[in-house]
Amino acid sequence: MPYKDDGCKAWWEKWDQRTGVDLAWCLLAVFSIALYMNIVSRQRLCAEMGVDFRGYYASAQIALQHGFAQVYDSRLQQEYLSILHHRCPAGTVQDIPIVAMPYLPAYVLLMLPFTSLEFTTSYLVWTAFNVGVLALYLLRFARAMQVQTGSFHLLQWLICLPVLSNLFLGQMNMLLVIAVGEFVLAYIRGAKVRGGAWLGLMLVKPHLLILLLPGLALSRNWKVIQGFFIGALAVLGISVLLGGPAGIAASAALAIKFAGPLIQTGATMMNWRALALNLNIVFPTWLAWGVAITGMALTAAWVVYLWLRFSRGTPERWILLILATYTGTIAVSWHAHFYLLMPLIPLLMVLDSKHMLPVRVLVAWLLGPPLIYLVVYLTMPELARNGFGLGMLALDVYLLVWAAGRLEKEEE
Picture (tube, rainbow, N blue to C red):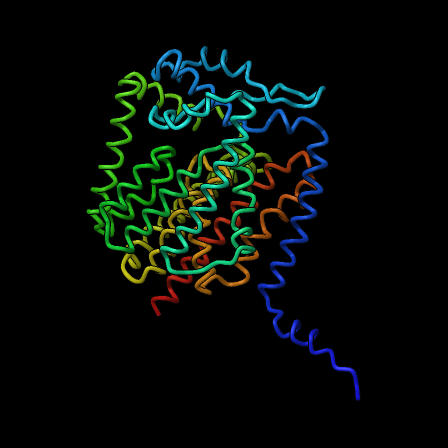
């Protein structure tokens, strides 16, 4: 009687495209970790950990010792930041960039408990806190949307470059994840005022509202806008109580500097502005910015069109509309690093669990960023950050095109 391997046959029959993606993700993760360890061995990486968290930590210290209005004083920031160093190996380069905190005083309040710990310990606790909150929030969002996601796939949504970058820099983009997620859930449940109030939390980075608020107005979602003003007034009210009008003015002035000459990483971002700055190296300025401004205009117009046509419908359509709006915002925004993609994670996870996310989109999200970085890092290391930023702009536009196309199909 011939040998029959039923086990192999059963395994092969269970093989599908998602299994292939999972395997590729595991292999890429191993290779990426090896590359990461090689970079860490150069020691500079240790000193650069939490470069944004350093600004948060120093700002909280200043608020406690000098008052919230003084958080934005450049002299005090320089003084406090200059003595904050991680416990790194001997010989590690410590000439790290100075990054202050441009957010409203209400957000400085969040960082006060962390000043009770030594700086490096505080950064590690902050990192663990963000990982835990993100994991719990993804589970909460999935449960609220009545979908299930396995532990392995949950790990995939947690371990992606936008999240890892957020953790490495010590950013507070978890606030954006919660704000967008709770807004979506509240709207789907009919609690539009409450959903709008959650959007007030996005004043931590208000430029991310430049397409969402006009979309809500065009679709006559007045209750959501009412809720937004309630949430925004709460954030502003707390900020005034803490820092006074002077603190608000100083925060706004520093935020404007972040959009201008203070931050010299514009060419590494993932927006049309970054494309112009890179094209300007080889093409005339008028042509480089002509391409970028055209891209901005077309992107904004497309998002407006989507709001005029698809602002009513199923929960899935609403998720797609918010996904398209947010990706459009990233492309149009003047200041947009790739870690700002974090709020897309709950939305993509739910669409994947509902079998609405094609394998090609899943591959683009899970495998695209690390592959893009590996390619540009290994082929042109001196331009790796610029090339990666443009690659992430391409990913962002691809997600926008897919979401818009899926909305059209849902209409049909």
